[in-house]
Amino acid sequence: DAGVTQSPTHLIKTRGQQVTLRCSPISGHKSVSWYQQVLGQGPQFIFQYYEKEERGRGNFPDRFSARQFPNYSSELNVNALLLGDSALYLCASSFFGSWLDTEAFFGQGTRLTVV
Amino acid sequence: TQLLEQSPQFLSIQEGENLTVYCNSSSVFSSLQWYRQEPGEGPVLLVTVVTGGEVKKLKRLTFQFGDARKDSSLHITAAQTGDTGLYLCAGRSNDYKLSFGAGTTVTVRA
Image (cartoon, rainbow over all chains, first blue to last red; front, side):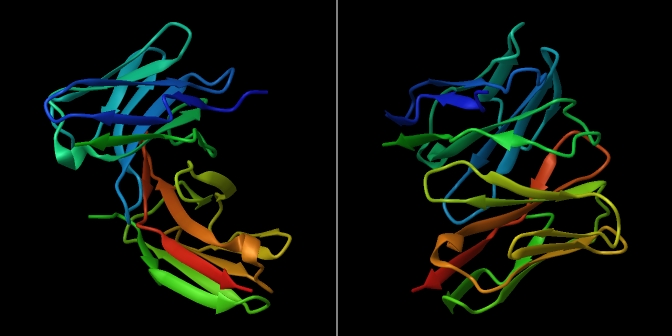
């Protein structure tokens, strides 16, 4: 079985540009969460989607948006990129997307560099 | 600010030695997960602990969940160079998200 897949793996963008990151969850999982991990820190929660609806949002500006499609894949969009948006963006897949989950599985991440 | 505090931040030991990593919080978690992450890769799930006081063993790794479900520890016996990596704990409380610690960077020297 395929694990969580993310694309692209690496991306370089210029300040002010927009970027779209993609994630496909494990087959059968209905929830996708997005995390930002900057160097030296643990992942920080950005969004969670379950059954195509936003279930939660972390403390990130409105420049960050996301959506989930009927096949449960997801996109994360970031507008007006800043240098501080440079990070590893992680997608996590789980079945319930709630405290009922005892497992969440991560993709390999997308390394975004803003110059 | 991380909801979960991990200690130590860095750990460097010789192959064959033992090590313990701690994860503490003032919050109660319904479950707590441990991940290992290599540079440029996503975190890989090692174990989930659910019950207060629970102890799980995976070969040379032993995981404990505190009785009050607020803290956890990871103990590695006879560390190997392949154990090198960033160890992250993540707690899930009565909502939808995982809250992560800042991680412990473990280096095992040959």
